[in-house]
Amino acid sequence: METKILNVDLGERSYPIHIGEDVTASIGSLLADRGIKPGTSLLIVTDRNVAALHLDRIVGLLGQAGYKVGTYIAEPGEATKSLAVLQDIIGTALDTGLDRNSVFIALGGGVIGDLCGFAAASYMRGVRFVQVPTTILAHDSSVGGKVAVNHPKAKNVIGAFYQPEIVIYDTKLLLTLPPRDVRSGLAEVVKHGLIWDEDFTSWCNENAGRLLSLDLEALGEALYFGCKVKAQVVSEDEKENGLRAILNLGHTLGHALEAVAGYGELTHGEAISIGMVGAARLAGKMGYPGDIHTVTKALMEKFQLPVVIDAAYSTDDIMSAMQHDKKFRDGKMVYIVPTAIGKVKIDSSVSADMVRAVVDELKGGE
Ligand SMILES: NC(=O)c1ccc[n+]([C@@H]2O[C@H](COP(=O)([O-])OP(=O)(O)OC[C@H]3O[C@@H](n4cnc5c(N)ncnc54)[C@H](O)[C@@H]3O)[C@@H](O)[C@H]2O)c1
Ligand SMILES: O=C(O)C(=O)C[C@@H](O)[C@H](O)[C@H](O)COP(=O)(O)O
Ligand SMILES: [Zn+2]
Image (cartoon, rainbow, N blue to C red; front, side, top):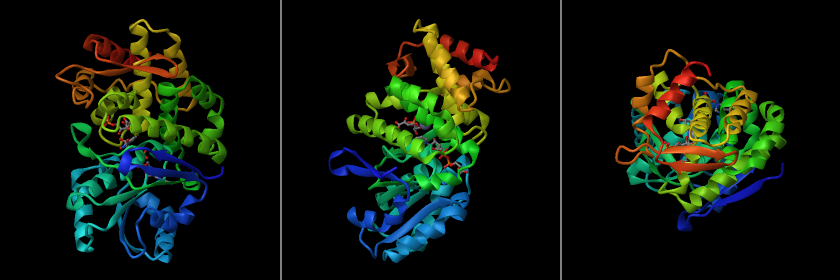
């Protein structure tokens, strides 16, 4: 696929997304084009898995382009998205003398993007940062400026809206992903179809095999579509006062499952796969056509993602974890309900009893 460029249109905080095979080869000139001049001190935040595979090359490219490069290597996994690791990154930034002109680079998946982005938002009250996503899932996390770490009780509740300077998305880096993370990332790809476009949802269904086997042509198209939806929604509603909540399809239940299971037990994509099937069940109970559930469940199964809740998790724990959802207002639940394939509604009329019934059905393996 030839390189494609999208723009996130946010006035003076607008930024480009470059997607293509080998775009990181030009990382130095892409940074310079964004006003990050050679000679600038950079801190690359990454995790151990990504470091072993891709860090030396990126450090080399940035060094050759004249940047001063430091690194912070975290443990892989969701548990790394924590205040303790955030503090450690800030310690490294201080020890290496980074100042307000310095730039943080997130080289990794969504965990690293969210963590590094929040570190950049906090360090000296804000330094610039760059997203270099290395997972499929990170087409979602690298765009839009939601940055955060987790609290043991709830996902992403310590965070900010803080936009990157540029997103540099090299699809070749995805070729080293383990199968579980391929499947997990594809859950968010399918989500962008389910909330936005019936035709793209059908395309995902038809191209599941190519996507699962990391066909770069198919992946490039899928990631371009997801980033395009995301850029459009975020450009209209950066801070989730309305429309942006649709990106949360499946997340009320999904985030609760991640917290109740213990961070890292379920991947984010696995959790929202179950959450999206739950939302489709809810839609059925509310009188929307039954095929939303059938199609959603079949799609998730096609991508080898889970569609039921482990019976060991307590329904009460799941229900109370959902109370921390950031969409809820004044104690009122707000759900993203699919009303057709490719369409969703932001709904505050869903009863807790209905949600509990869905959770119990999913635990019963239905
Ligand atoms: N900010 C947002 O808008 C947003 C959107 C979606 C998800 N998220 C967050 O993203 C996180 C999940 O992201 P994720 O699934 O990318 O998780 P992740 O960052 O933990 O990456 C998944 C695994 O893949 C490994 N990995 C990453 N790139 C690799 C590569 N190229 N080759 C081999 N291994 C590689 C990592 O080491 C890790 O073990 C969650 O915390 C979720 O809440 C945020
Ligand atoms: O960008 C958004 O907005 C999203 O909701 C995208 C989600 O896929 C993502 O998981 C996000 O981090 C969830 O945000 P939260 O506000 O529910 O924590
Ligand atoms: Zn998500």
